Amino acid sequence: MKPNTISYKKTAYRRFIEFAGAMTPFRSIGKATIDGFVAVAAKMISKKTANKYKTELSSLWAWAGKEGYAADNPPRQIDAYAIKKAVKYVPPANDIKSLLDAAKPGFEHDFLICLLHTAARISEIRLLAWEDVDLERRVITLWTSKRRGGNMEARKIAMSDTLYQVLSRLRESDPREARHVFTDPSTGNAFTRTSNRIKYLMRDLCLRAGVRHFGAHSLRHFMATGFHDPYKAQKVLGHQNLKTTEIYLHDLGVDREAASVFEDITNRITNGENSAPNTAMQEGENTPERGPVINSTNEITNEITNRKNSTNEKRDYFLQ
Image 1 (tube, one colour):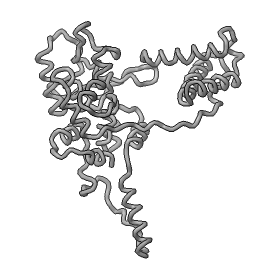
Image 2 (cartoon, helix red, strand yellow):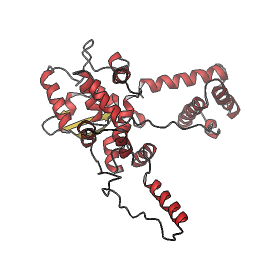
Image 3 (cartoon, helix red, strand yellow):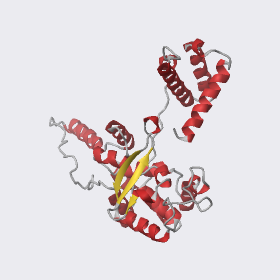
Image 4 (cartoon, one colour):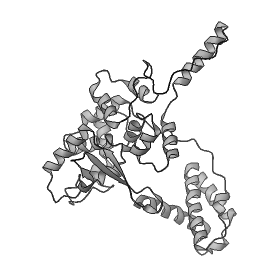
């Protein structure tokens, strides 16, 4: 597991132990005790945190059951609190362009290009090694550890022309003994997630660009909205399950065709027509309202950097 995952679990378990009593035998802990702990967490912290703690305890009891320490899973019997689901933020195209303009030449600009042209997680670019960069074949291999048991899994991404130029320049200017593409000069190794350069990268860029603050993962959200084919999006985003990608795209997208259907139906009502609503537009069809289908990160970033009239309407187009 990642260090921050372990840290969160330790916090949840420590607070539960403080609530239940350190000397309480594990086998004697029942649903009532767990229910009381979750209720206190909801009252003292938040319902969202209470739900997370319930999930962590359920994972603990599942492990205990596998190891023979528990016969059932009391946390799983407790209903989760109803909460307002957070909306994934998708920054407008203008803000992405402002970030690119505000980025300083060198690390900031190059790191930002790598994030945009791969739709990768920040950790995947932070830990990107030269052995996973094939300039000859123009292929980059990204590794994710978001798998059961912490197993690492690779996915290959074709380099865009822009990404190829950046990585070629970095390879020529970087000493051959360097293992990682982005190396912390103070350690000679890859940047850690707590390195100031990584920790405050997006904050500093957004401040300098004068845009609403958003994290590196929002760049991933933005790039994902350009993929209308869930299978292509799944490969690029590195989701193990297509259902995850479909949910991801659903959370990010807006069905703008529905607005036309609503308009058509109400027009028929007011005009006294009996014809069925016109919903014959084919998927992927180019129309003035929909625009061309985009299927690569390079096409998306080119749309940002090359179009003179890049406005918030661009974001609306991506979210169709």
